[in-house]
Image (cartoon, rainbow, N blue to C red; front, side, top):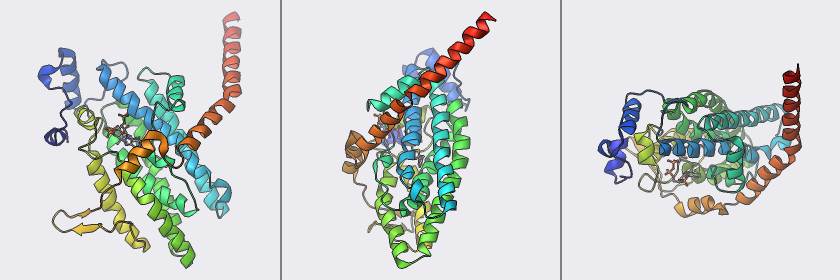
Length: 329
Ligand code: FAQ
């Protein structure tokens, strides 16, 4: 993938000749498939890139609970409610593994959260869209968790050990999430015409934002070439997006739903689907903080953090008291 990105003109990576001897040795370990561990020497920029990506990923898992939490009290059956709750709790767990993985890079959790709350750190664009009906729970599991899996399976083989290992369990749980989402869509599509229409409406609203999850096109992606050289990224944004389309269109057909893209067409030559233009203006607008729910999501997270202050303080006070008692004994 690295060679392919350099060919497309993304040359913001250093050649071996431009690297220091330490950097060259580091790159050689990466090229040999050796995992980088927290205490190993690493270039500052590698550490910074990982802190950025892993923390954004952690924030996405945590903020990603909010759109679904909206439907816990309105799930149509007790079983659906229990399953949805379990899924949302899994996402909290993913956030915690990922914050721990980021902390191994020398950044504190307080700093990571401060960056989220101040708007400095990003989280995935997808979580800035509203969940208007129960069918959105199906569409999120099917399309959003489906996209997350496609993006994250390769991360299980990425060069940074703690991130790669965290991803193994995350991916297993995401598979269950995608299945539960598709199961909701199946039930709606086999139901009344109104229920099927709800499923179609959810697909119409979540399709394009799900494709945006993979990030800007390869030509516009500023970080891809360097991340590919360091084996943080094993496949490009466009390649993973194409996999999502190829995998999902037959699933939509099986449900009897129409993908909202008039340009979607099977291409005999490539053996893949051609699809229409993504509205990048919408994507960048969401990244700038102007999506339908950006402000609400951030406010909710900040409030949860502030409301939990007394509990964190109590934990610290308890730990300190215990330590003092142990020291005195
Ligand atoms: N949203 O140069 P690139 C989930 C930013 S987890 C917001 O291509 P990169 C589970 C990017 O940060 C979903 N920002 O960047 C779940 C960069 O900005 P910066 C999260 C985006 O890092 C399901 C700039 O654009 N998954 O869904 C987005 O090489 C249901 C230029 O982009 C991960 O985080 C976006 N969509 O590639 C939870 C996976 N795309 O920081 C609850 C790990 C790009 O330079 C419910 N992350 N940007 O100012 C990745 O694989 C990568 O970070 C990419 C972006 C592919 C997202």
